[in-house]
Image (cartoon, rainbow, N blue to C red; front, side):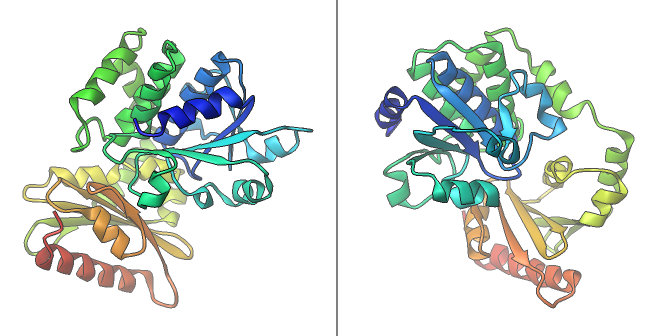
Length: 333
């Protein structure tokens, strides 16, 4: 792993380390954060796990040591010293939320990124970023092993969850034999796949099922049957007492359609539309998302576009035509 020696030097020379991740964090960001924090605490470091907001209930099973606190709670602490900041699962501190960003801009401490998303070469050169890794959790697992720290059950659950979620249960093309060798080491701590699965997927209320049903009713395909999409809005979430996090896997239901190569979801919020993309590997949806102002991997990507003055469904129609045009005329893969 490139730049591991630099990270090891950071760890050895820093007593007080703050670890954070992007705002609205997913399991990869949270799991990587928690496992790395526990490992560094084992090296007698003072570690502060601080996110823009408190951890959502869905991931409370990962939070056995109550390590992650909201920035609001962190700000109430007095005389907190930070020698170094480690940001996981993103390579841009501007994605960490307004409160965290304001704090980091005033803080006189360097930042080190651990991430698996594609980025500019000049950023990758100075940080531990590997876009061939299946998840940031995979990178953190390798870091912990290289530091010669044994995995605990809580580390293993955090990292297993990170990798399962970010690979959509090992279905993405970035999953390799190395990914499964890491999973094997995590399972050797005594955790079981069904333990994580039940925590992630087997605790839904009936309202979640009703929301999924409503969203899937919006499913549609293009004439060639190689592009499918779903549409929903923030009012739907409120109606069914659900969080944005509950909807992240909805798009994967489209990938079972015969002939589908690209799937897309449109989430209409008050001032923006969040567009998420998935690909079975034939097309590079990361390139498509970048064209639309976002980014991501070849198989999983996203962008956010402003509503402006246009009606949301009119704007979505334009986006559908744009995406369909790309799939038809540009061999992205």
